[in-house]
Structures are given as C-alpha cells and as structure tokens.
Length: 639
Ligand code: COA
Ligand code: AMP
Image (cartoon, rainbow, N blue to C red; front, side, top):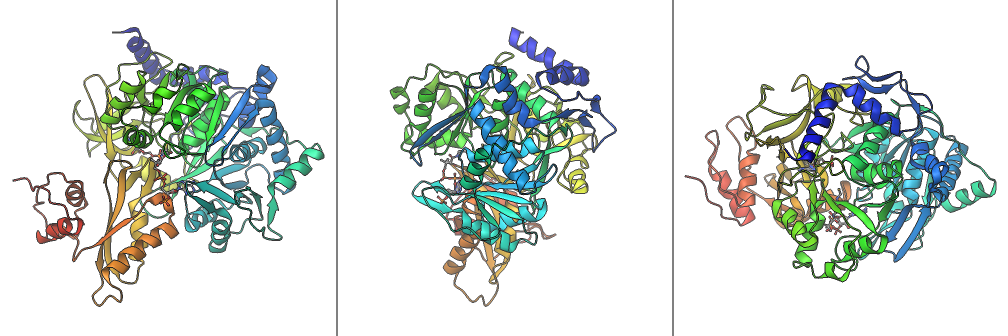
C-alpha cells in the first residue's frame, strides 16, 4: 500500500473506532467559550448530538480570532464580479467592522438569539456579511437562492418565520437585471407570516422603491451604526444551537429545512480545509457556487473563513462573462490555490473551448487542485479537465444534509489514485454501506442504496426545522441504524464509492437540486391538465433537465401548444428560472402498470435514447410509443 492509502485507512478506521477521540482532537482547532461537556452525547436528539454543552460563536471563529491572531490585514473576501465589472476586497479587520456594525443594526431592530433571518441576495459581499452578522448575534439565518421565485420564497418565510429579511434591489444575470424587490414583495404578500422588517441593499444597476414602515435602506443603517460606533459582540451560543436553516428539495413541493448546528459544523469544516482540500491558512481558495446552496454556505463562507483563507466571491458564469477563460483569469489574477465547482461548469467550458486554448493565456502556476461536486462528475469531463490542467481533478460526493463530503479524496492526507466516475472513499466519521431493500450489505460491484451507519459525524443534520417526525421518516426509518442518503451506487473491490443517481424523484439540473414532484404539483394545477409526470432527462450541459408529460382533459379549452407554453411559464413563475423547465409535451396517455403506477423508469430510458424493455406489468404497451412520438425519439426496445 502507498503511504497515502495507509494514512487514509488508519485515519478512517480510527474515526470509526474512536469517534470521540478523533473529533475531540479536531475540536481543539476551534476557539470555545466553554468546551463541550461530552464530545458526543448519544442520549440527545435523533441519533445523538456532537459537542453537547459546549459554548461557542461561529462568527468569532470565522472572523475575530483571525484579527487577533495576525490576519487583520489579510484579505478575507475578494469580490470578483465580471457581471458588474467590479473587483473589491475586504480584510479580516474590515470584515469584523462590517459584521459588528450589521449585528448592531439587527439588534436595534429587535433581532435576538434564536430569531430567524431570511437572506435573499445576489452574490455580493453584503450576503456573507449578513450571514456572519446573524451568527455573531446568535440569530439563525436562512439563505434563499436568488433564482427562486416568490412562491418558493413565501414557503420558506412561512416555515422559518423570520423577524427580518435581508434583500437587494436586484441581481445581475447575463443580459438581464433580476429585480428582487417585486419578488420579495409578492412573497411577503403570499406568505401568512409577515416579517417585521426588511433591509434592502440598493445596487446601482437598478434602484427600487422601499415600502414605508417595513423596508430600511441598508447603506443608511450601516453608516449610522458606524458613525455611532455601534458594535455587536459575539453572543455565546450552545454548540448544539442552530446556526442556519437551509431549505432543500424534498419529494413534494414543500422543501425540507435542514438544520445546521454551530459546534459540529465548525469542527468538521475546519478539519476538511486542510485534510480534504489540502489548503493551508492564508492561501486563496475559490468555490464557484452560490451562497444560496450548501456548497456556498460551507465553502464560499464558513470553511475558508474558519481556516483563515482568502475566499473568492464570484458573481459571474464560467462562460460568457466574458468567455470560457473566465475561471483561468480569476485563478491567475487572485493566485487561487484550489477551485471547487460543479461538473456542469466544466462541461460548459469544454464545449466553448474544447482544446483549452484560453487556459494557455494565463499563468496558472499557483493552482494545485480542482474539486468537483454537486452532481455526478461524468468521466469524460474529469478526464478532459485532468488532461488540460495536468493537476488532480477530485470528485467528491455530499448533500445539503451533511454540509461536507461524505465520500472524497483526502488531498491533505495524501491524494489517492483518481478513478474517474468514483467520488473515491468515505471521509472520517462516515461508514458508508451499500445495501439492498432489506438493509443487508451487498457485495462489491453490486448497485444498491447508499446508506451511512449511525451516528453521523459532526456537521450532519440533527433534524429538520420544527419537523422532527418528517426527519425521522425521511432519513432514519427505512434502513434502521442507518441514515438514508436517497442516492444509489456501488463500491468496487478497493472500497471506492461510485454514486450513480437518486432513488427518489429529485433531479439535479446544472448542480441544482430540484423536486420533480414539486413541478408536477404546478403542472397538475393547470385547468386543462388531467394528468402529468415530470422526468429528468439527459442533457449534455446541465446533466439533466426536466421534461413534463401532460395528458389534457377531454374538451380542454386551450390548444396543445398553448398549454405547453403556459405550463412552462407557470413553473418559471412559481419555482423560478433555476428550474430550467423549458419543455412540456402533450401525450394521449401516460404509460402505467396495471396497478396504476406511472412507468417513469421506462419513460426516462426512451427519452434518454437508451435501450429499454417492455415492462411485464404494463397496462397498455402503445402508451410507450406515444412517448417516443411526442419526443420524436426512436430508441430500440430490447428483444
Ligand atoms: N438569480 C436569478 N436568476 C438566476 C440566478 C440567480 N442567482 N442564478 C441562475 N439564474 C437563472 C439564469 O439566469 C437562467 O435563467 P434563463 O432561463 O432566463 O436563462 C436560469 O436561472 C438557469 O440558470 P443556470 O442553471 O445557472 O443556467 P445558465 O444557462 O444560466 O448557465 C451554467 C449554465 C452551466 C453556466 C451554470 O449552470 C453554471 O455556472 N453552473 C455552475 C454550477 C453551480 O454553480 N452549481 C451550484 C451547486 S455547486
Ligand atoms: P445538494 O443537497 O443540493 O448538494 O444535492 C445533493 C445531491 O446531489 C446528492 O444526493 C447527489 O444525488 C448529487 N451529488 C452531489 N455530489 C455528487 C457527486 N460527486 N456525484 C454524484 N452525485 C452527486
């Protein structure tokens, strides 16, 4: 065995044999007001709680302690926005001054420990400042991705019941300004719960009117707090108190509010920065995601700041801002040591610049490693990136629920050989098993459900926000003693894990997690639709895109084309542009089993152009021809 393999095996084995010792040591990297009474208390919560009784503050660990320890003048955040032609940076000392002032502004508005605050913002420095200011005063933030429409925001407002909302006048997307204020106003109108106040950042690209009595101008409040010398102190919270709620797609239109605690989150993320990502404090780190997703929470904001890195906040795209060399420009200009992004970004770059000609224009000598996650990293993309970059390209697999990698390749411990198509091996604390329907482990090479033996390691969800029963039911009941990931895959003889896809109706569109069930609820609400199904079908760029199949009511008032374009508009209005729902087709009937179950698997194979077999239980075989005809695809039926 190579050194890296031995070291990884020893560390992983120890983390499972002696979890308290392992994570207790990792916790020494964090500053605690009071250390935990127990590293792990199995009697608390659904499967136990990490760092029970510990008292901490997340913002102190992300900001203040670096100012105290010699990083005051090091850039903490570099904001690079090709969409607005702006590059600015904030040192750790400046970041501390901003979060102290904004924390004081929030306290003046009556926000205290345990209150929820929604953040609906574009990728500007004020967004992480708002997150950190919440953490500073013990408020629980809930960031909502800017590509979601009013109804999605309203659902989250009703669930989290925020006292305050942070938003902006607009976001900037290539070729268009996204006005946030009308979306926010409509969400507050739709929601039953009404926040007391909104703090709105006016951006020069589009200024909005403020609603009297509710809205406050961000810049004026900030300036007043600074002029008055107001500073919020770091409020001590329990390690087990929630730091944030992040909503993610469930199997219905109602999203799940994943809760992240303070203590375990810090310990796991701090551990991951060197051991998994191989970066040292002081280095420049870039996660090209959005703060609305878990990747943005963990690796644009918290992980790199806990570790004393400089983190890049990028408001742009991999292509078109201005070209497919955008990532190489950012890496060379800011001396980025490691980049984390979604495979879809690399598929986009590969399509525009297949030979990597633009890469050659930039000095990338600072750059060591590329990390990919958020969706399956297809081997051709991994191989393309590896060949062009001549550096390790590391796939890793995780979920909103875990907050950090379940399976990865521990670069700091020693890079293990990369097998394209595999996210490599379980990270410390995760015993990953592949099981059959009876929860029995299956042999190497056999596909099954991917589960994690309890207890889950630090940072993983302790519960869903005020929905403990839903949490038990969704994750901990089907496979007793395990956490159900809802992903399927297999392990090879070396213990490498291959994650192949979801076992539920979640689809992954350009690294964005979406519920087809949620889209079906919208389609079914159209007055002319009798029945519908939404499937994720293969897409060269985005991995998957949703496609709706509709059966019209007899005597439907509108024509087929009209209904198709109306439902596309409805999904964009209700979920948002991020759903990328652009295709709906009318079919005379949906293929079903004799017991009435829609044959989604077979429909997907036909849509993806893969060979398929006629299911023995099909009610009407002709219904499958209707699918091929509607999609204008002809795929072979296996003999
Ligand atoms: N606010 C408002 N609208 C947004 C938005 C935001 N923050 N983010 C995306 N959108 C819109 C886009 O403008 C687009 O709208 P359109 O249908 O009018 O064109 C739609 O949502 C879909 O966006 P996206 O999935 O980003 O597709 P795209 O075609 O704009 O770009 C890629 C394609 C591959 C370049 C892009 O998906 C990308 O960069 N992905 C990186 C991966 C990533 O960040 N993953 C997150 C998890 S790690
Ligand atoms: P999210 O919660 O938005 O991070 O999405 C999590 C889901 O994305 C997982 O359950 C997987 O289905 C998918 N996913 C994330 N990373 C990977 C990966 N490296 N390989 C395969 N699937 C992935």
